[in-house]
Image 1 (cartoon, rainbow, N blue to C red):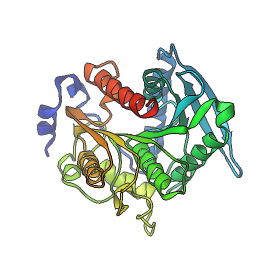
Image 2 (cartoon, rainbow, N blue to C red):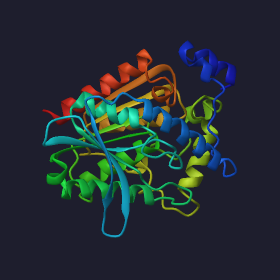
Image 3 (cartoon, one colour):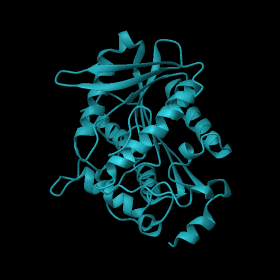
Length: 310
């Protein structure tokens, strides 16, 4: 797909971002991290968080400490959402999806625990998954102190964080993670194999096909066993928690999100799928006050409420 075609198909509200690209090459990665962290830090500081109590702390585990941010948006003992931020496995921190965590806590009247997992390439797979799984177990162990209900746990994530959430959901049904009742995956990374949308969207804002290839090279160095690292490579999805999956039309990750939703449905898993026309990867962060972004937050919040307050 040529760039003019992508611009033409973008919603007019997003066209000012048409030239934005995510370059994850080793030579520019530090600069990209610094730029993203700075922008998200400013956005987090300016966000209206009324109705949500927020606490930064460390989850002290047996052999390590993982930074977390806790968002309390409902009465105790509250259901809990373990959240994994976006960033292609190589970018981001607790500020990256601060907006989304506030929205979920407020709209679903729940507690959100966001995980500051280790990043590739310094810490390739399985570091991020290990951190997320360790924090999930920590939440259950410390549920009384945290004033959360360990029988009502959902996992959620955006982009690369969606991959981590999907792997936690799979681990839950396999018995290697605490029970999870719901998974919310937004524009998720799910498959390392090429798809038509990855080939088609080689020059789209937010994220594009070349960035996808760079992401996987950072996260899964040569020789890494991919079967346990890539959600879509799991052969049987029977029994995994119900899912809400959302993605963008003009996103190299679109096809893997749709394919994963179809596989879940064929496995008998209740699954809600939304594809947002005219949008690109990360539209909800690029334009958080846009009508379509607000509609997404409302749908996500409603899905979490149904799953956690039944």
